[in-house]
Image: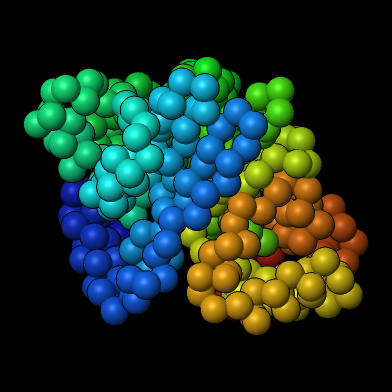
Length: 301
């Protein structure tokens, strides 16, 4: 991926598309069942894509208006939209990488061909590498999905324009974290710095209510939890979650998402850089130094 960052965007996107398509070709389609979480004010449908990606359909229960997060396989999203009878007119892009934004153009074209669907509004960070972007957003910008209020969190590091989307109602709280925060892990620092990831994970995402459901961009549970268990072998929360992930087949591991902010604070070593046990593992004395050293260790794990 570091090599791809040196190439022109269109070329890097094309090569990335070839890679993900090839690695997904042998993936068993029987393990792609959409999973639904129905809450008081909203419904989130998790739709597996490619080899280990997640797309999400977010529905306002009252208005039945919907938005989709990172629809890299738009035809599958449209199948779910038709099946559920909701009105889709918004697309939320977390970042420009092809396995997240690679479906933007195709979905936009579908809307152009079907004018009775209305207009598709495409949100994302201020970045000309995001195809079909109509509404660039930054920190604390807001918009609505039906009667659901979305607040944007700027979390640069994995990419320079990465955005997380936080939705809070009187009853429910969810956040879509793309490749910034995973279950028990975080994204690689491709276009940013340890300071930026520290700000994203500790100052912004950790500050959300503990019961906030975390919907991440990939299924990386086992490898992340194995690393966390290596860093903190006495962390019983991590050990229990790892045992659950190892005992499950792929579909079962997918069911571990969503996590919660509270769970991540207990099990995600990248959100635990203030802990003496985590600092001792990398031989550092400050949280920021620990963040940098921990990511380097995970990259080699």
